[in-house]
Length: 208
Image 1 (cartoon, helix red, strand yellow):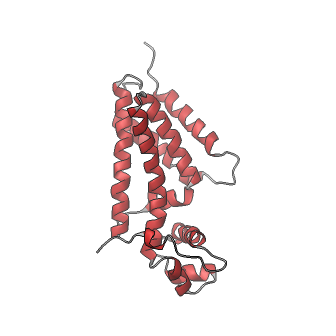
Image 2: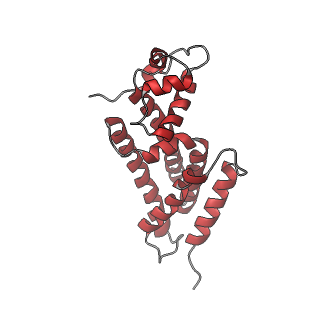
């Protein structure tokens, strides 16, 4: 079975009151609150006060909604990796690339919090989820590569293995989905600064 593509619906015109983006936002909210498997198109239609056919006007199926949501998070995280790759070609140090990748990951999480929250909850129960997990593993591997490269150039302490440092570092970033709220007192820049300060001060090489 071929994977559904949200691009086929990207140009659809919105029904009065709810455009495609508004439908997607509400769907992501419902998926996070009730679980993807526990949410039907009928549930979403009732939430929006629309008919199911009005939902299908924007997205042909529930799986198209899920893919659009997961692609939002994955595309933003992939852009962080692409930026690190461009910096490498420009001669930047692995340490600098890793620091910017951490900052960028925090900003993505804050700015796309609902979509990233949904991404972190997928378990591979469908073809769409399995493809999302494959993309996420590629991103995780690239981030782990940045940690190893920074360690190899002597920019990180040597008593913490790079694979453990990777898990702890990005575990801290991902934990933001559990407590960060957009209406809180800290914006993306402030949180990114705090995370990088805590992480990289702790990972700095110890003086002899």
